Amino acid sequence: MTQPRDRAPFSAIVDRPPLKLPNNARVVVWTIVNLEVWDIANPMARQILPAPTGQVLLPDVPNWSWHEYGMRVGFWRFHKLYERLGHRPTLSINARVCDDYERVAAACRDSGWEFMGHSWQQGPIHRETDQRAMIHRSMDRLEAFTGKRPVGWLGPGLTQTFETPELLAEAGVQYIGDWVWDDEPCEIRTEKGPLVTLPYTVELNDIPTMIVQHHESPYWATRCRDTLDRLHMEGAERAKIMAIAIHPYISGQPHRIRYLEEVYDYAGGKDGVVFMNGEEILDWYRGTRAAG
Image (tube, rainbow, N blue to C red; front, side, top):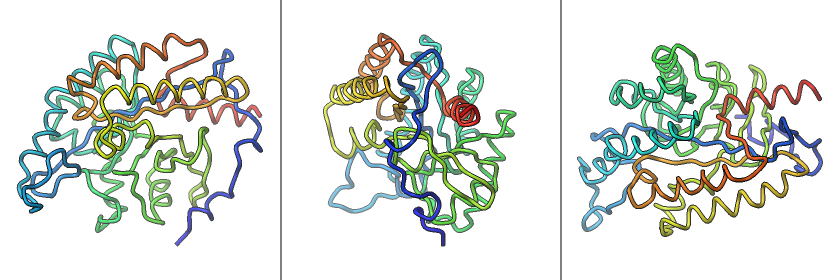
């Protein structure tokens, strides 16, 4: 059982050589769109409507259909936005989406989005009876669907066991988003070589902000702008990464989509802000380390 602290020594950001982006850019905005399968036979991954009198519903039709709205409607608001902007975000995707929602997965593939592994279907990693088999099944399905094996992985709910990094590296994963511990890419050790941790987010993630903390819709945009302003200031000395994590059943709702659009308009109006997906960030980081 390798503890997280055994995979990488503590490292204060001020003690590292600063990373530099091309053309004196200051901040990378990394967008992660999460697409999931909520199996109607299981309790739902999230709830917008609590069960009456606290009794768990099976089947949980209201919450299942809330998620389904994201695939039928909300996703297409995302797709239209990124087509307009010319962005190719990272897609954190349950591999089963390629079967259950082929129309949605194909739209992402055909638009050149980066596919990142996100388990077979939505559920915590520690409840998997055969984690290794699930990881390989997921990566193999995504590779078959897109023609390219993903290089990134995000656990559902950022869940891992102590052995997960080893199993991911064994399956060909090169970066993970589960360790939200820095503003920069970092590395952790595995027996198969290093895994890069990219700065995923729980702070600019619409689940904790909107569903857990119950903030009003405009607040998410305010938090994103404030974060970008600070990282842009700090980025004069060392490059920073700002992740945005969204779900179509949340940010794809008609009362929230305008605030997502406003965030991109704001970021696009700042000098020194660039947009990359996870694989592009990984390539930049490795190139910078090699050059240094």
